[in-house]
Image (cartoon, rainbow, N blue to C red; front, side, top):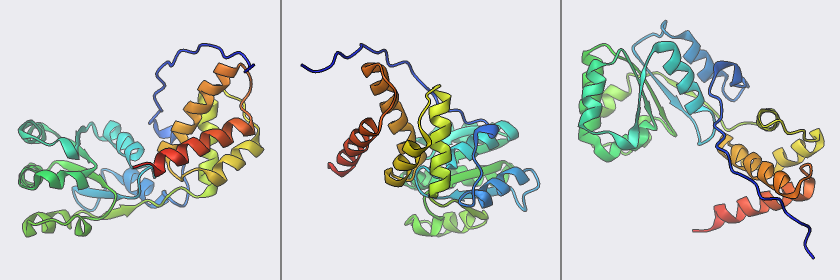
Length: 229
């Protein structure tokens, strides 16, 4: 017979985007320095560029609080976005590389921001030259923004992130197990959050501490999901 499993409740657990919870490392030092230089930027714009899970959204949230900015999602721009931009003092466009799906609207929004001297922070997985833009004037305006780059987390940062995520959930995990996970997990904050949530639920369900077997099974399931179409 299989061992008994406890019924668990999946309470929502939101990651903290506070400044003290951002872990500085060589992979994000350039971007963190650029964010903390505000409002002493060389111009009114800045572009954060890096792979998924590198920390762009966390840095964006830190800047939003410091600058009193509003946030717009690049994939959700509409006419209300233009109005919001015209009334804003500072603006974050998260995933700005997705805004190219409505290129004319995006161009209008950038013009409104520049005309009104709005502080503008944009995030993307690549620099604007790689976005496939069809509007030369839009690309020339975006090129005015200095680019601060983030790299994928290295092994040391991945271990530190995992340790923090486990601690946030009051989970005690052996350091050797954290090292085991860090060597095998996708190097992104999102992957670390998903794995920790899975292991937290599994430990509650089994009524025991997190084990290497649990971690190995969870990593295997994550890998299979990422490979499925």
